[in-house]
Image 1: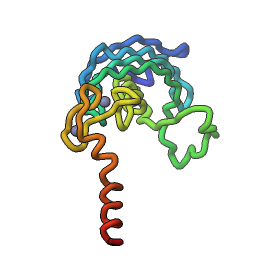
Image 2: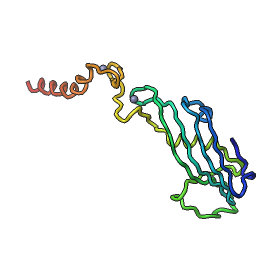
Image 3: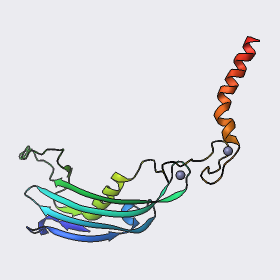
Image 4: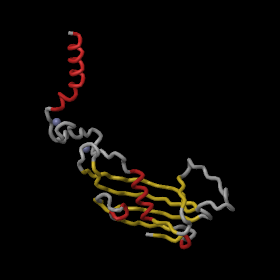
Length: 172
Ligand SMILES: [Zn+2]
Ligand SMILES: [Zn+2]
């Protein structure tokens, strides 16, 4: 959904929109529609975008490589600002700690793009199915969350054992 800045009335616009995975370029499976509540208000050179977003996506655990459901429920509040032209710069002083600022073309506010950005901002770089995910055994490749294997004990002690053996051999 694209909103023309021109069409935003004094009191602002409020929407509830739902999206599917297409707004994330279908990089992941969406388990529930991405639900966005958004309020858009116009000032002279800025547009304030405020609202909340809920999503439930399927991510791939970076340790055990299994898919898991990742839920997001977050609020956002930021300013879209016209790119400063030489003439008007610096027209207003903004304190960056108060609000996030993004630049836009000044004509349209793209709600789908805003929703996608909010999700990408929150999405973990290294997703984990849970904090204590044991991952895959580096030796035999089994999922250690589901089964245990015998390589583990050997793997943890062997480098030092091997080193000690060498030293002992040197001495003798
Ligand atoms: Zn995992
Ligand atoms: Zn193993």
